[in-house]
Image (tube, rainbow over all chains, first blue to last red; front, side, top):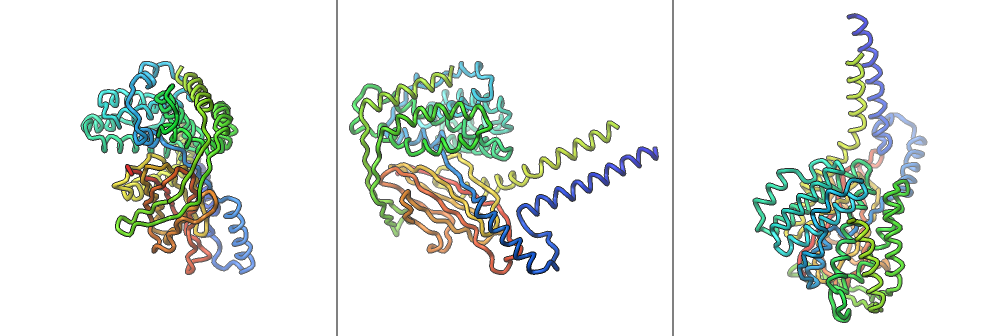
Amino acid sequence: MNNHFQDSGKVLILLSLFISFSIFSCNSNNKNKNEDANADEEFVAAKDEETQEKFQTAKKIFYSLPSPIETAKILQNAGAIYDETLLNPVGNSSQYITNLNMALNLGIYTTDLSYASLFDQTQVTLNYIEVAKKMADGLNILDAINESTIQRLEDNINNREVIIDIISETLLNSSSFLKERGLESTATIILVGGWIEGLYIATQLVGDKPIEGSMIVERVVDQKLSVDFMIKLLEEAEDDPDAQKILDDVLTLKETFDKIVITQGENTAVKDPESNVTTLKSSSSHNLTKEVFDELASKVKEIRTSYIS
Amino acid sequence: MIRKAIFLLSFVALVFALPVNVNGQCKQFAKKTCKVGLSPYQHDGNYHAALLIEGEEAELYKTFYSDTEYRIGVCGAGNLSDIEFKIEDSNGKVLYNNKYEDYNWKWDFRLESSQQLKIVVKVPVNDVNVEEPEEGCVAIMFGFKDD
């Protein structure tokens, strides 16, 4: 019995030391709160310089990719129609067993879900939240979409605003869950999957129609502006082979996007004093040809097919 | 022996959970404070939040689309001074700086043409407490609605 207590005591002492060390390490990494109040000025100055240097070298840089909701909203605003045949069938969900497939298709299904909900497709919305949950569960993203989420969705199935809010919440939960655990590359892959799905729907809706005057085509061209962000985020995940595979696909798309030249005019910010909304007045133009559009559509279809197969 | 093992494992789990808890608090702050304030704009679902120290800067790049009205919200935890943020276009032209708007935490805007913008966020140094800079959560969130 005594031995048991002695052993426990040793363990407790070791744990206490470890806890103290861990807490000290955490704080001293970010702050100097535990410094001795009587430290001489020279030491404080040296620490300040070190801290300043750290700020300069470790400036946090974020790249925000279009979310599935934003992608679907952009499509709707551009005058897209609803075409259910363009969605990834829910029946495909059982074949996604790798983390890569589940992450890509969580993004794809969330874009489909957002697209369907914006067009008030209630039953499709319910079907797609179920498969999105299946993908999130498969990735062990705890509680991103739980039973109460689905219940809330069912209770508000005719309230588009609440549905979009629920989808937004599930995206936020997934993204924050992954980022908190250092799985940023999985969060990026989910967004790339959703983005590819949006591009697929957009390019398929245009099909063989003329590109001139099409708002959907304009939004497709705009995607060139996000490609470099995707590449930077995927390049940062150099240790993740899944991210590197997806990077190859995005680089293939970049080759085609690089054939499009966008000319951006100067911005002038004008604030409406009544609404407090500022308008960034500027013009832009591009040189997209039907040939380049078709090349892009073909590549997007090929990549998307490989993701959902 | 089994007890010790359980004890040790629990402890290791606790140590590894510490940073997750800190970030979890950041998520709760982003959800409960910043996201709520985006209304009536619809949050886009993206999550950008980090622990920043006074004096530290962060940059965020994003593509914004024409025909959509946006709200950018930059929220800092209560222990931090008012957060500064400015918006620059791809030519480096400053389009907005909240320093001249009483450190308003949000900015509503629309664009006539789609483009990339940069959001530069800075946590000002508190002159009273230079040697012990505060650290807190800063969240950058976006909402949109029909133009």
